[in-house]
Image (cartoon, rainbow, N blue to C red):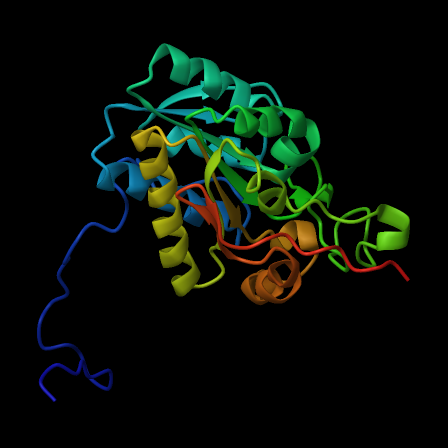
Length: 273
C-alpha cells in the first residue's frame, strides 16, 4: 500500500522529476500545429532513435513540404529544406557526399505519394542507403485538408466529405506495399502513433530502419500513420480511434521487409461497387 499515491488528500511528499520528458534533440514541446495532430509524436520517435544510436552529431534531415515543416524550429539536427516531393533525391546526394552520415527524409503523404512518387520509387530501386520517414494522415493538411493518394476508401477530407469513393476517386496507394518488394529496399515498416503501444512499436521500427542504413544494407522506409482531426472534420478527441478504425484498417501496420526479406505482401484493393 505504501506505493499507492492517495488522491483524496494532499501528497505527503513534493513531486519530483524522475527523468527527461523530451528527447535531447528536441528544443521545445511548443509547436504551431493543430490540437490532436500526431506529427509531433512521430517526430519524437525519430529524434529518440537518433540519440539511441549515438548519431546526434552525424545526422542530416531532409525536410519535405507540409505541416511538419513547422517542426524544424524545434529540431536540434542539421537540416536541408527540399522542394516539394524531392527530398529522396536530395538525401541521395547528401549520402553520396557524406556516406558516414545518417541521412533521413521527413515527408508527408502529399509530399511523397502525390508530388514526388517517382523520387522515392527510384531511390528505393537503386538501393540508396538513406531512410525515408513518411508521415501519413491521408490529407494535404497544410493546403486545406484535401484528399491525397493515400486517402483510404471512406475517409473524409475537404473534397471527399462523404468519404473517398473508389468508383469516383480511385483507390489509395499503399506506399509500403509498393516499395517493400523493390530489390533495393532493405527495410520497410508501417507504424502508428494513435496509442502508447503504437508509439513504442514505431520507435523500434525507426531505429531498425536507421540501423539498416548504418550497416549499408540499402534503402529503408518507415511510414507513420498520424492523426489529423482538423483535416478529417472530426472532434480532436476522436482522432486516435478514427485513425485506428479507418486508416489503420487499410494501411496495415507492421514490418513488411526486414534484412532484405519480405514478411508480408500488399493486399489487392477491394472491387469498386
